[in-house]
Image 1 (cartoon, helix red, strand yellow):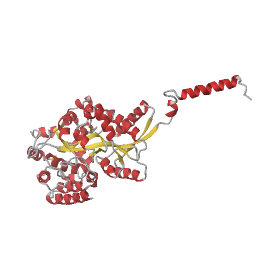
Image 2 (cartoon, helix red, strand yellow):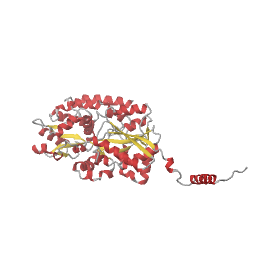
Image 3 (cartoon, rainbow, N blue to C red):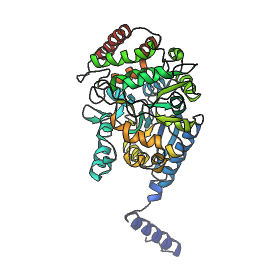
Length: 429
């Protein structure tokens, strides 16, 4: 028997018919399909003072508000035991989708099959022309086995800063060569003031690497074989040793931490200090008394300095690599507030960001961008590209010991031979 079509049944059928037709229309139920955005976990190291993390969180909030498909959860990660934090997370299957980290973290984890290469993002940026915002040398620092293992974002460059007041009081002009630097350091050393202050930690070994790179050498030769005892590196260590033997290096340097040495320089207890020039923006910096030396010319006419490449990487454990790459690109293009408001301690890799008035109107930062960044070389110099062992070299501490022994007055030959043997062991694994 055919059912009687009541007004109630007719309304129900009309509603169902409309629902079926609507389901085939473009964009139907878009809101329902995206009711639950993809969640991405972003771990970010603390790259500046207290305000840095707050500004980074504001940037993440801005991205989240800009679309409905992705929700990024931000976590600020301290540097204490940072490496173990990531190793533990990877081993337990709880790695983040994306993170910043140590200069060579990406390449080491990539060699462990834990990093998702960003080749497709690089290719996308190459096609639309935006990749030209990065120098080739910056891109080379994240290229390994024909893959891009991360995207560079920060230059942790090293330059010699000096106290204008100390040099002026001693009638000393700003040096531009090793010979002039040694003479100036010796002349100003008196009455509790020293030519140079450094530390027995990371900054100490960066001084040794800077000197080697400045002399056309480095920790490696072009074939990635250890070269700490090579001619150019040996000359560089001997140069630092000569400063110590002149009495021009604060004798407390071997036991100083970075914070100790920076505070000593800010107090006017030394004329020269090797650091990232952004330190001059710190609250305790007497900005009107600090200048930046021109890149020193080595005895063979070489120019060069150490530049730690800070990068940002995607993890293979991510269930949403495409969405993560989308956020990575947005972050890279919108990160200027990390410096202008968060006072990040490095300098941008992107040339367009360095054109911002924040950098262009600061004489020291502008000079750094124009003169130091172009001659910066990574920890792997004079070898090309990047390789996993650099993460061990960066964090092991054996180069700290090299610096400490030289600061204590030991002839550099013995410390250099010991460091060379240790580095050979690292490279053999």
